[in-house]
Image (cartoon, rainbow, N blue to C red):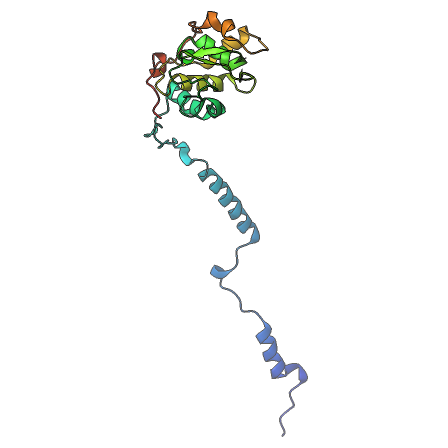
Length: 227
């Protein structure tokens, strides 16, 4: 008897080709992660990265710069005022110079100035409203065209207090702190809209604005700031 013919449906070549097209089953341990899991992992990573970038565990920020807190201790009020006042002084340095010596014949010095080391009320009033006309500083006459502008509208009471504290304790000057409350007291009592003259300020030359000063070096004649 002759062998029966293979039917088309059992053609071996076509069966093999179909098997080759099938993808091999992956082991459970190698199966790809679902998309929702990948998305959640990305969200957690972003949040964790943000927290790490914002000083994790609320660790104290240490200022290692010269004159800073160094070992993590916070600055006392006088040190804080000096540090911030040094930056704020940039608005004054163009005329009075970085060394506080001013420019002869044009802008009076702040270093060793009786205007700076004298009564705090006169100094606050000058910084608040400005000064115009002829003045005498350290025995020398000055009459700057247009005078000095006031910074009361441009600076907060705290910023102004910081700058004045810095000026009173730099370049060999020594003086007590000027606080935000002192500046606010002058502001509340004096609504002047024009610059002062030397004659106007004479009654305040040796007068100090009353107010509490934080304990520490700024409560007495503070040590001069090093340049």
